[in-house]
Image (cartoon, rainbow, N blue to C red):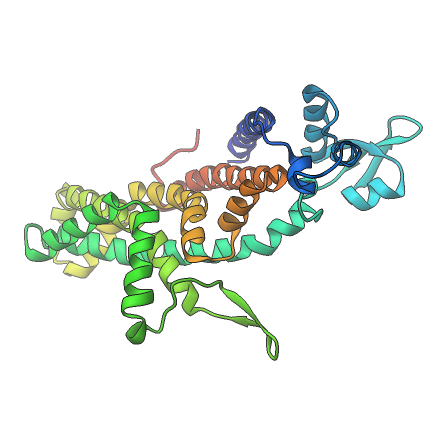
Length: 352
């Protein structure tokens, strides 16, 4: 197990390095000028040059990439001075020259072009909101999707089965941004008198008297929208896996031994049918973080997606690049965890 995890960690590091290369050079070929976006169209040449020098934009692209890679690496070479110590918050390992040390640190995502705030701190303000949205949407999809899939398989070719399959087809066919607009209009506008829900709003709002206020009702519509497609996929996967499992010999043996129907379905059949569902759940949870970009923007939900879209509009590339790298890291970590969960659910799976 330990050797397997070490090997997978090495693969994950190589994947992350490839993503860093692609993301960095992709944003460096865009025609936008971050310095002019920061200062405005009427900025003078001296001010533009000062901003480009401050953010390192006056260096060649290979040199910029080398510095960016050094900032992202958990082990990097940095100046042995108070300014670099405060910026990177590193731990000295050993000196490499008179003015530089090899240091251990968290990856440094640099500063926002627009707000001059640390990108890590800026993202940490909104990532919890997105994680809450993704987790609740995934929980909603798992509970309802597995339940409908089991009911559909147990009651095959009945109205329950046809209704579940029809619902899953509609859920798969509707893109998130389209479903979000319909759901926001229907439940947040037309039926708002009965639902008590708003078309837009964030998880937290500021009240001048109460301070920061938690608004859970603003989570309902984005959660339904974001969980709709994974729910539909889980219904179909659970149904097909359950139908295949219920036809196995050991299920017929369990029936012959006189086990109850619920014990056969939920203790024996469902557990052995969960492997493809676990794959879908893991992949969709990571995808929900990326899919939240559109949903958060439609509902005005203050999260990672909305922050990234706003940063794209102002060419705030450090924020966009930091968001992409965070989502890529989540994908990589979940791919490793899926294999471990496979082994826990089904002991027949070997980690090799």
